[in-house]
Image (cartoon, rainbow, N blue to C red; front, top):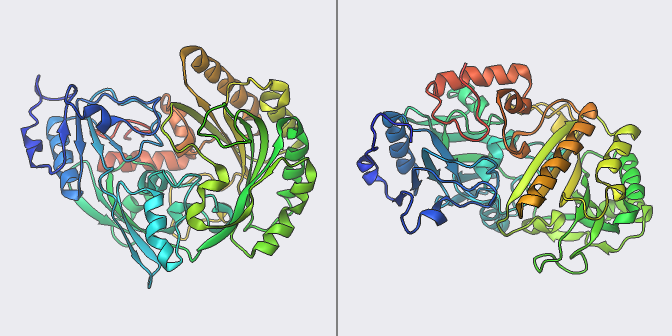
Length: 462
């Protein structure tokens, strides 16, 4: 641990209501383990925070001892193992308070989207969730948040009204567009670089149900479905949200039949309008190639997991992504060469996806933020399962080849939540425009000049 003493005194942390654990303590492993098992944390101290006071105490101790700090709720976004310092686990802080009159929710630091869905459902309200309701709300939103219904409603960060946050000086602050607006700006899209959020207030949407699911074709029909989908995305209304996915699924019980162990091309659909209108809109996709499985139906918004069918059990994953300017015929050919049937059924990437962007995600936020993906019309991301060293090497090689080949069609930028393992400063900066990155560096110098929050997708203080 980086500290002013050879043996850091954690007596000051005795005021914390939750557990304070060190390596070797019986519950330590459970406390530090998150969803992504590829990032195995081994901090010197882990604090299981139960509320804002615990986080204030932990941050004041970190400042006094010059100890670097990381934060974890669910660990879905953990792409960087924490090897030293202090880890604050917020997973006990799951309270969600819904105000149906203002259509807002106050969401604690460790709450998952499933908690928000459960709290909002009795009022017919829902949040702008991503592809899995098991993910944490705060970490997702700090990175901008890429919702399943993003084309219809924008980024999750666009709906945030305020934050309660502990800055590295140990102060508990309230920030919104009128109070400390620069801090409010940096928290929406700048990830966790300027403080540890204890709660946020966000708008909810009157969306009790939606029309969604997946259209699955056998993998040999990938090209036909992809070309039809690419043409279709140029004709549909903003409210239609979709993604094209190539799936090479392992033969494991967690994957339902008949998808288990198969090679599939899929279009995932999410439509918040009238089901009959959605059905008419997606008819060309159902005719583009032989459909083996069709799960598109009217569903409760809380059942959103059924659209993308993200894994629900922890696993070791390698993610990466790239924002695309457009999906030209050359880009489609390159994508098929890298990930389509020609790459073989034993291609090591579990999932390679192209998300349709634009719509509300192309429009400026009502209040300026640090999200830098509004100029992308499409977005490519991939996941590989790092099961063993040979597989891990093959995944790294396939990932590099895919993004090197697709870079010519990209904006040069990534999305911070799905960037993958952060590299050097030049690599981390790709999640923002140069202007926004420099502004974040200056905000980092204001709120965290000692760079205590240096883990994960960190920004270097100016």
